[in-house]
Length: 147
Picture 1 (cartoon, rainbow, N blue to C red):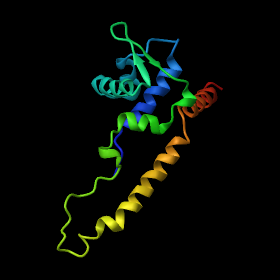
Picture 2 (tube, rainbow, N blue to C red; picture 1 turned 90 degrees about the vertical axis):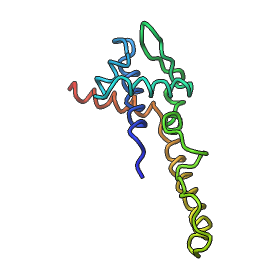
Picture 3 (cartoon, one colour; picture 1 turned 30 degrees about the vertical axis):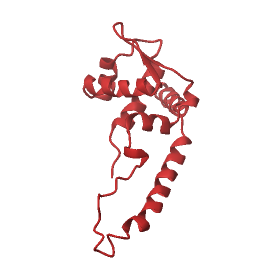
Picture 4 (spheres, rainbow, N blue to C red; picture 1 turned 60 degrees about the vertical axis):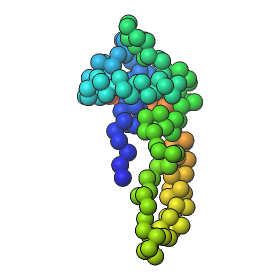
């Protein structure tokens, strides 16, 4: 299993918006050039982040604004905005295992709790990191580059 790049692209978007805000207009084209991807992909992710209430996109003149303090937006908030998971479950279980098979009829009992525990652990860790951590990291790295 691999989480799509939408999550890391969204984090990159937030890092750019925070860093370049007030220095230049942060548009989907600008973000696409930093991320090295198609602006359509960026606009789609911006739409998801906007729908989740994490950003505001100014149409026409362009620009992106973060709606809450960076310390109040966790990695989990971003993840949930751009990686919608079916029925709230990270793991999609294959449909209709055979009830005729001793493994098939018991596989859910064996795995459901474990998979739920794994998802809970991942989500708990994602709550520990915020966009403020990214802002601080960028500031430290860029400060080192300027030396």
